[in-house]
Length: 515
Ligand code: C2O
Ligand code: CU
Ligand code: CU
Image (tube, rainbow, N blue to C red; front, side):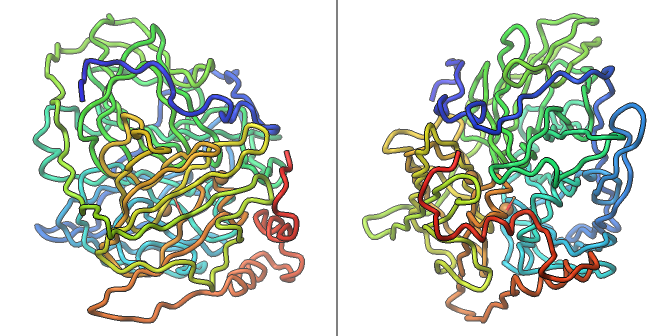
């Protein structure tokens, strides 16, 4: 693949962009002064040896100064809002103590991490208020930007909205040899893209903003900062973009149509770098880009836009000349081969609003929807049948594995879909094929990552068995989670008002468009 070509379009189907949704909330330029971008600190390990890393991750409630005036009540990991960046080194044994100091149950989902089902942190592994547990696993996957977020179905969306999301960075020896920026906080930063509506006294009100097609707000919030600027002190800056919004797609481009280079996707580096002027990222995806500010002078400002709204400012300072060249080959794929006998699994995402479904069904925590043997590669064919009006892009995500995209409706995947992925936007009426294999046993969710669709039941689960060590998996009952939520909130179960639940009453008339 040539690295000379510069892509200038967003690839996805324009009629399916979120801008066409009935409930679309456009971004507005915030009426506040520019604020220094909060770059999350690296979480300090409790202890690190040559072979092991120990961390403590605490979910907590707090207050964050986001807007001028009153602080916003928020949730976060080890801090009031969002969290510190968690670094895992490939090859090390990781021990994470997860603690819950929130007033309600939560789970700790490692989005993109290849770990057994009981470590993955989906809805079967709640940690109740005041409790903690230790997760032990080996980090054995390529360098990538992953993330940690809450996943207690059907209240995942609300907990993420409160702030329970943070970047996780995997480092490995290969990435460490490449001539690309990696000085964390200086020329290598996470950029967590979210949007919120600030109500009276700068508070968030998830219930008031609820939309079964995904909650949005008019104000872009990046790493918890509104109207941020970043001081550019090196010619090249590596941005680890993460769409941490519940529903929003971001269509990114810079002032002057500045070119940039994508080097990594969800679960690894891309096989080859790809140059862009415009780039769309859908919910839960990660895209690492390198921006070369070489043509600018101290005092200049470069603006990052989503559609036509400025969301972040880059203030150019003095920097040393950097004429390093991003290598043509960044990553070698070494994935299982597909043969005539490779099984094919079909998955269908359908509906909108409360009627969303996966394979025509709502999620059931006590039902296993599919089985795959550990280590076996299968082809997954994921179709978005949602052709209501123009339909919408559903970002399909799988837990517990990283997959390789094969094609979109028989055509090549988009040029930045090389390498390993765990989340992929599927256009209306389109079928995306990828090959997937699991390295660990367990029960893993797969779902649309518009988080309200996931809570609304557009989700299923697969049981992965290790033939050499057959085991029974414990499935938590949704009822037990509901009872616990009700108790924590001091209400009767019948009166419990979790937004996602309303969708489960819409099972009968699931096959018409409700725009
Ligand atoms: Cu980001 Cu079910 O996950
Ligand atoms: Cu996940
Ligand atoms: Cu969806």
